[in-house]
Length: 82
Image (cartoon, rainbow, N blue to C red; front, side, top):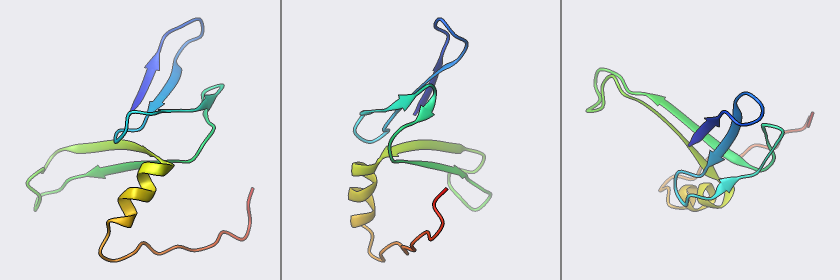
């Protein structure tokens, strides 16, 4: 969950894990730790047709979530880290 607040500077960013509620660390409005951002726009054949869902998960909650999958996620190694 992302919150944009008006403080001393315009639009300060706060991010919270939608699962556990932990605040995700940011530094000058940049994400400073691992976070999974999910976005889905539900379509015609869904019971949620017309809805858009956005959420953020901290790395611990992401790990717990994918551990519950019947078919594991595909993991690849990034060779070029920028």
